[in-house]
Image 1 (cartoon, helix red, strand yellow):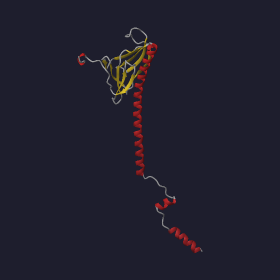
Image 2 (cartoon, rainbow, N blue to C red):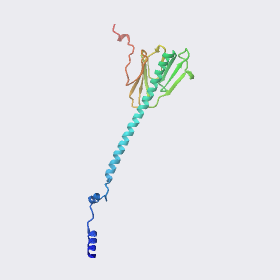
Image 3 (cartoon, rainbow, N blue to C red):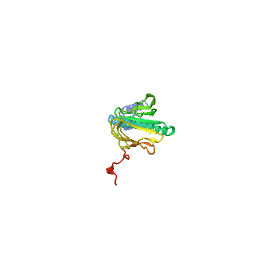
Image 4 (cartoon, rainbow, N blue to C red):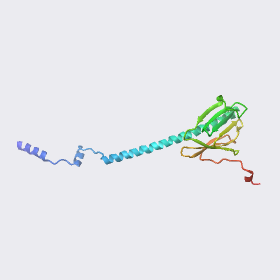
Length: 204
């Protein structure tokens, strides 16, 4: 009996070590990443995070740019609607030199007088990613460096036209003021508007 026990112990100690496959099957060896696989996974995750971050930044910049333009459109629409309902006169002034604009209620007969502080309804400076390039009125008056004024009263806009902006990537957008139907709209690109024709362009 003692001999059998000794033989069993000898067989146990002299048995070959289990292979990795056998250990895995027995639950002794858990699967794991190699160093190369780990590096590849980290690179892929980093790339995904980088792409998501850049897309999010671009979306935020675009939304900020569009948000500024929408604020201008809303201010001009509000001025037009209020003028139609109350008979008051309003003026939206774009200063291309300082890249800013303001909306005011006109309270004096002199349209060329200085803007009074209590006339100002809203005033904003444009951000670095939003610039006014030029303004052209539907009577042909053009400016790319001075002050442009859009006035509105009960009968509508005194002049229509467009204000052309560019974003950080120099992509143009246009705010169109239509004096016939009072609409103020935002469009992608440098949109054409109807301008008066010279006598040479009108066939007799």
